[in-house]
Image (cartoon, rainbow, N blue to C red):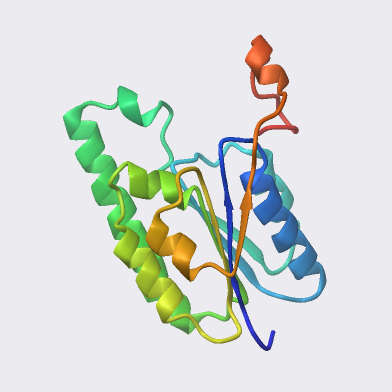
Length: 175
């Protein structure tokens, strides 16, 4: 890729991760290497199984938990933050050793909002990215510092969703 841009999928609607996965799927089909780092999600989502079948597309979940962040006690929160920081720092430190055309930071806004990583860390990645690397960020409540660096921002807006009627996330559709 000659020039890589910074994309953000944000908003209160569903589909942010799905949009990022769609770009990754299309790119993999063209021979690009894709790395998706998923914050605060476990390895139970269907996309993990699908991506295992795709050469050149890797998903690395960090900070996967089995409850909501607001349900964590102080010790659990500290342990989660330490885990996310250590893993994220290690992965980003090794980025220059691997060939990645598209870097997806899924739910990075949630990790920032919860104080698990700093917005400055993401700004540094964007500011120092190789010219040809595309970066995709997802999550609600995009910080201004990231919005200012983006070339494309798509806001997902909820209009109607069956989850509002009590339908839980379904395997193969929402997870």
